[in-house]
Image 1 (cartoon, rainbow, N blue to C red):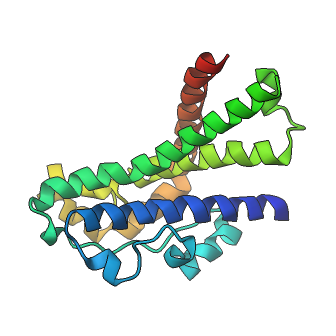
Image 2 (image 1 turned 60 degrees about the vertical axis):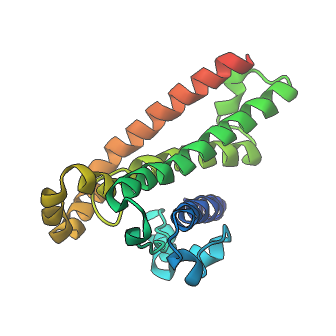
Length: 208
């Protein structure tokens, strides 16, 4: 990746992961958990959610891990149930962001009377390329966070349905994460493109 692409990636991930972690903090706080507010995480400011080592991953593997928001489900009236609901809500934040940027792409193209084929041409302008990357990366984040290993959100879903088996996953989560990054990531990339194509086609039919 060139410098411009890395800068775009850093901006997109800073905003996306910042809002993702803010969603963690906000929903948990609304469920009477004061932990995120006490730790200063109840804000969409991405600087509050930056993990220095995770930030360096942009330059090493072109990806970024935010600083996870700490929550305490024991404050919830029904800890197991609400932890599941919250786990599903958080990746939805990234999916909503992806849809919003698809809308922006289509509104931009429709306003300028651009043919739909021009949106993905190789000589696409930098701003529109940024919009496309923003949408695609947020879909990737949503899918990635649904993987059922800690500390990802999908693990909370596993805990709800397979509480005893989840303890075994917790023991070996680092090895599972390495395996996913090296061997499963191509599948995640294909799934991301597939979801983007479906969403884009649905909203393209609405606009065009």
